[in-house]
Structures are given as C-alpha cells and as structure tokens.
Length: 602
Image (cartoon, rainbow, N blue to C red):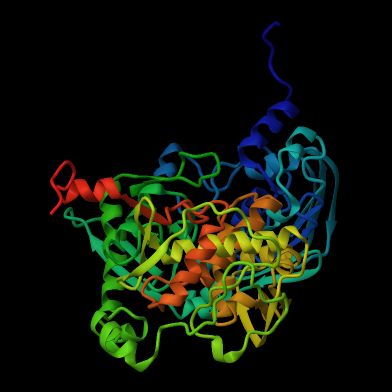
C-alpha cells in the first residue's frame, strides 16, 4: 500500500481517540474550559449515559464572536504563545485539542457571548464540519451541547462500558472538580434529575459533606502543611482532609489527589498517603483522603499524558516527603487527643484481664444459645426469642437430610485466647479458628437457601438512614433488587440517602449502617462486577459480619455445636475468603515433638 497523507477528518478522529475516550472525557474537557474561563457556576446535564447528550453551561467570560469558529480548529488555544509558556502553565487546558476532538466525533451546538459584546454567537457542527452560524441573544458565558457522541465511530461505541458505569464515571469527574474548586457552584443532572450539587461557598468541607456524606466526614481530619525546600525558593503546600484510622477502605480508590487544581493519578503520591498510616491501619486497609498539593508551575510538567492525568515533578522525592509528612502530622495530632479511653477497649473485648476476670465489664460474653445438632433446624421465618440473642448467633442450618460428614468426629477440649477451639480427633489434635469456621458454616447455609430461591429470613428495623457519595449511591440504586433478594430492604430517602428497613435475620444484632456500608465498599472494588460476583460479595460480607468473632468466649455446648455444623460443610478446611479454618497436629507429630517416637513408654 502506497504512503499517503491522511484526510483531515481521519486525522481528527485519530486525535480524538486520545482525548475523548468516553462520555466522562467530554465532561472533563468542557468543565475545564469553563473553569479556565473564570466560571463560578457550572451546570452539567446528561442524557442517558452521555452518548445522547452532554450539555455544559457556565457563566464564564465567553468567546469573542470572531474566535468562536477558531476555537474548534485543531491546536488553537489562547493559553500558550511560545514553548517557554509550557513551563509556567496555570490553566487546566493548553493544547487546543479538546474542542476539535469532541466536534469530530459528535454533533456540537454552542451558544456563547463574551462579556464585552452585546450579541452572542451560535454554531452548529457535525463531525467537525460547520453546518450553521448565526448571531443570537444570550447571557454572558457559554452553553455547549454535545449530541450523538461517537455517531461516526461505531467501533468506539462498542468499547464503552455499561450505561451505569459511564454514569458513575461522569459523577466522579464532576465530584473531583467540585472538590478542587469549592468556590465554584456545580450542578449535575442526569435525565432531568439532579444528582449532585455543591454550593460554591469556597469551603472544601462543605463539598466533602456533599461528596462523602456527613457520617464519613465526621471521621475526616484537616490537613494543612507547607514545606520550603533547602534552596529557599520552592514551597510545597499540602492541604485538604484525610481520614482518621477509624475510617478506612479495602482499596486505594478513595485517595484523591490534586496538583495546582488538576486531578492526577500518581501511584507514588498515593503510596505516600498510605505510608503515613504505617502501623495505624491493618494490612489491606486504606484511608480516605482529598489532598490539594500546590507547587510552583515551573516545578511540575503537566504535558506528559494525553489526558493530563499524570504529571512529572522536578523534585519528586520532595513532594513525596511533603505529602507523607502533612498526612502523618494530621493523623498523629488526632491520635494524641484523648478520645479513646480504657473503657472503650474493655467494651470491645481487647483487655485481657477484663476478659478473663470480669467478663468484659460485667457483660457475659458466652452466647447462651440453645444450639441444636445438625438437622434439628428452626423453620424459616420463625422469630428468634430475645432471650437467646447476644452479640452473635450461630444460625442453624436449613431443614433437610444430613450431608455426609467431611471431617472426622471431633471432641471439643477447650478454647484458647477466646479465639481458637481445641479439638481431638482419631488422627490427633485440631486447632480451629472459630470466626473462620463460623463464616464457612454461614456461607454454605446462606447460599443453599438462596439457591432454593426461597425468601431470606429478614429482621425488621426501626428506620435508619445511610448516606453515600454520589457514585456509590448510584451503585446502590442499581442493585436494590439484588440486595432485597438477600434480605436487605433499602428505600431511597432524598439525595444520595436511603432508609434501611430490614436486614437478614442473622444480622439482627449487627449495626445495619456498618453492614450496608461494608457491602457497598465491597461492590465498589469491582469495576464491572457481573451479577454472580455481586451476589457473592454480598454473601461474604453478611457472613463475615454475622460470624462469631475472635475474642468471644464460647461455652462448651456452643463450641460443640459449631464443630458439628462444620463437620457437615462441603469445604470445611477454608473460610469463604480462602483462609484456613483449622490446623491439624497429627498424633505422630506430637509424639515426635515430645521425643516419644521409638522411645520406651513410661
């Protein structure tokens, strides 16, 4: 095939592939243009998932009538004049590619009026080609509508995710800019329904309450620090909020970073935030943080990524240290405040003396349950008497024939550390993790009940409300039916808020807000979870919450009942997460350790 110069339309579509990846990319570029124009009020309207319509309206400075068409030409910008300007970039956009790229793969209708002009200008473009232009009356600012996105690049449409995922991506983009620019009022509407609004007060805390919810915000700590490098001419500022160790998540996705007002993805700086919690969080748990990092523009290169989501620092180590120090100081300062007292540890069962001598502040930890042998099951829907409830219950299995035994008959000897059950079997000693074992029992019982398509027994609650960030609220809405199938009845109750009406019966004594919050955290871990994966995550969370905890003293009868149920499980050797439920010490191993193999019996 002969070499030839590509037509401008193909060149534009290729360029658009780097800038306009999905509907959220369009929202990002248009919002950045509005911010660069000095807007203090930005409204984003979405039709369907953004493929049908994206309209961004602002009260910024607007475009001069003589420059409106030029704004849609490739590499046309008002933000750069020379190569030297690249080292002093103070705007979000600077390449002059976004509008041309968007117009090349959609139908664009823009109405704009510059503050110094009396009349506005309306342009209509389709596939990057001008179709119409006329003068119109309009307020100062810009309204830009993008319709039929990717209409001329069907291959790109095929690679978009589900409508729900694309909507969540848009919510995340708008939320990020609302956090970065708290002095700007943002409104996001999807299909005529308002789902996010910030008040533009200039107070980051106000936006955080909207984005995270008041319950989470109560656990957020202010961060405010500044470091001047040894040279004396470079200052790095870090401000924002980071969570107390009591608020943590299962992944790093809730660590949000901005550099000079620009949202960035930086694994190194994310690690700096995580490292600030060293010894304060369990392995595999991560904080929630929203941090604004300010550095002189000459110290950061923002022209290293097509979407400008990555940056390069002149002194990356200094920025890393500044972020880590700022977050660590905020967390340590909070830790020094005497809010946790000994009584609180006692109530959680963390005081060994209290646990052994006083039953944890006078509260009996033995569950006092009337547990039955396998097969003697309570019928579904029977109410559990209040007298047999304590912190945790070992639910009885469903009615039906006994399964074949998958473990040898075990005899309970005792309990170690209120966490491990010591048992004896024909082949030696078994140490059983009571929490992991109970998780396995509950998991198999719960999944059997669900597989029979029978209603999960529910425990009705006095109405309790729970609030989520906007993106998580959308996820809850999408899975209300799935949650209901597992015994969770949630009803919408205002913006991003739900009322918890009922939970599975086995969670009757658990905090419903904590359980539902944990389920949503688990669901957010998957980018595109299938129905089966969603169901599994819900069940895993329910079983983890309902299972006997480490540190809980059990009676001999309770331990024996738990072991009998474990013996009938299909996979008794691991919990649903894959961790072992038991350690086997054979008779030969014990004899070897005590030097009795081959020895004369005494």
